[in-house]
Length: 600
Image (cartoon, rainbow, N blue to C red; front, side, top):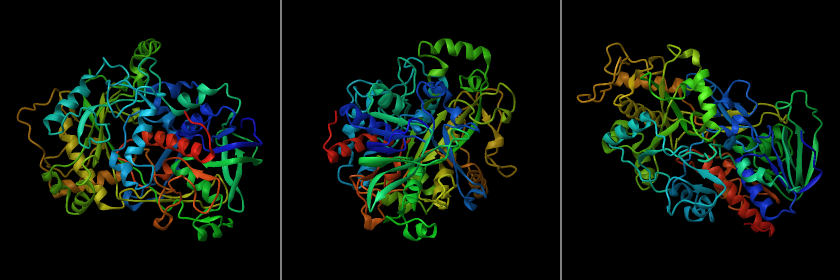
């Protein structure tokens, strides 16, 4: 645990993406303001596994101390599996460990929150403010002078397999988008931008871009390896936080609790799964649940009663042995690594990218709508049809096998993954503490695939992705071990090719009802988190199940705000890093206004 502060002006309980943005903005504009970031995990400063884009998977490795692995309850909808949801557990939060995929919410996502000050018109200036966009000049919806660089990593290097994906997708009716991150495009394919500096080849995380440049500011304090236990109150007024050295980060750490006072404000910013449990331990939550645990109730609110995520299925395909993928890097090929390390000294090469170079936002055609089935029809009519900027599914081409190397059929096998993730699943979950103990596992229900309609749209997406893959010249068949177990004699049976597919007369696979059952069984066995949890401490009117208002104030308390993805009251059709960042920007604006502070 870092040096203990006795009293500061503002405490951020959690040092993740939004917290780093908000704290950094406030500290830069008010250098005499005492701000404390309390982070459970380690510092990320110049950590090679953070700044080097291609090493993002190291944070998911067993035993990793830079991610928290939240275990969900066993689920009949997932064939009895207990899903795991990893979240960022170091300074910078998810922005330090994510897949670096630049993806923005749709305009209607913000508008649907129906909260004053949070509409797309309100948020677009903040989205522009935070980025330097290297993709194309003079785009009205993008910014060119912000702290976060957005690029293609190496503009002149676009792998052939990614180009093949875009060409086939267009032939399959998915238009090439000019900018699928303009907040208005809900259907189209495009090269995928990344949170990478094109000059240095480094990750653009919130801590390196907002916090570390202020290292000379003696009033900006960072406590790492420190768990935020609970918020402290005088009546209903937040006056500080109780913290303890995190024994999961530092083995054998002294567990003596410490109290830090806040003169002006406490901000809970521990993430979608961390913030609700901190609040509940503090007495902010469902009164009956808290009373059963012997926790005095400060404010009776439905904290943790909702949980959302995107549903992801990564389906593997064999590709030609000369296809450029991340496989040699992940296999630790010494010759490839030697070249890559040399190139990375110039900010280029295999280590300077996330190996995700193309993808799509997808909406079904009228024919596909019929195939998805009747349960989806009213959702389409009432939700998607009036909002053409919303994708039903997002799809990413991942160039390489991200699973255990010993699962591959032979040592030097090359793979691609077609990743389909549902933009707006219907299923919901919850997260509730089970004890006052800050280390006790919560009652965590992910809700994944509890609603049949979430399965139905993934069945459509599997078929759509497979038709693209089998027309790409690099395709050499399905990796059958991780595809549906189709009935014997099925037209959908997996194949293995020795050469490029003959696409001239290739017809779409015709699936039977038994084939659809096989796909459903496969989805229930292999669907997982997309690392995009949101919506556990909702920003809504209290009478509608809200926990915070549009100024981020926790209902029934004073001097307490929440600022992270837990507050968003509706999902976003995008990877969530951009939204977490802009929540941080908005939080900085709100805090500055409420406390009469400056802001650049």
